Amino acid sequence: MAELRQVLPGDPAAAWTAWGTYTDILVDRCSEGIARVAINRPAKRNAFRPQTVVELCDAFSRIRDDRSIGVVLFTGVGPAADGGFAFCSGGDQSVRGDGGYVGDDGLPRLNVLDLQRIIRSLPKVVIALVAGYAMGGGQVLHLLCDLSLAADNAVFGQTGPKVGSFDGGFGAGYLARVVGQRKAREIWFLCRRYGADEALRMGLVNAVVPLDQLEAEGVRWAREVLQHSPTAIRCLKAAFNAETDGLAGIQELAGNATHLFYRTDEALEGRNAFLEKRPPDFSETGWLP
Ligand code: S0N
Image (cartoon, rainbow, N blue to C red; front, side, top):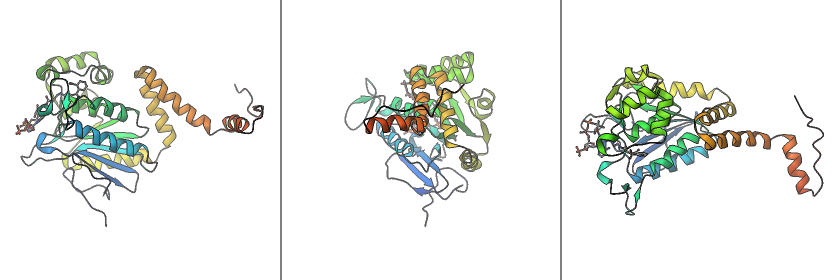
């Protein structure tokens, strides 16, 4: 019997089963190839502390290594007891020490950067489901997802210049690629809040839906993606990243080409010849136009 865990308002849109035990997040999966990852700190508007990020990195790494999963829905548990909603309100300011966010080991960290890279290079499609606030580092996490669906109560914004921080990596550069330089500078310099419709107009999200339809819409989008070629999708994701991510992006795209090449008779001949201690014979391949 599947255990149904309520993450967002509305009827559960898939037959979710719990996948792993964590303190700060909920991870579920369904037999259709979809995983659901939710930050579960609603009383803090789903702010992340180092432990939250460690758990998210673990969940996304497990998803990467599971060939049955093709799409991840990334969201935040809501509502909180006071009725508030958030996808994520960024770094937990109550554990922000002198040099970063401090966990039980006493070390100051900014380990959300590790999480950003894992989501960015995950060879699967990540869809953000944003209900309520996506602020600060939470706004950056939603930005790094491949697709973003906003509930009609979604609010986006940056606070760095107000609270003494900034994300000069994907948070600035990739934001400018998505919404344009003018808008990105406005978002960071003025620290305003933007509602769901404005986010849609500026290309920050793909669609806006009623709050109680958010998960169902996410599952609909996931099912559409899952009908398509996994290899085409992973190569396209790497290609989109390569355009913005410098050599790290080219590494990803090239890694996909190598992955495909390994499966050819030509590459297998090279491996077999080495193992059989003979010269390779690539004459079957030819030099195609
Ligand atoms: C999210 C907001 C707008 C929600 O407002 P609302 O609904 O009125 O609720 P509140 O009463 O304000 O909040 C409810 C409870 O939740 C706590 N809380 C909310 N957000 C945080 C938070 N980020 N950290 C800790 N606690 C939080 C409230 O304190 C309240 O609890 P009680 O009742 O017990 O007081 C509103 O809450 C808000 O504006 N939150 C702060 C948003 C913010 O400034 N976030 C931090 C921004 N910075 C980062 O995220 C930096 C991290 C980062 O990703 C990064 C990455 C790479 C390089 C650099 C950086 C960097 O910028 O440092």
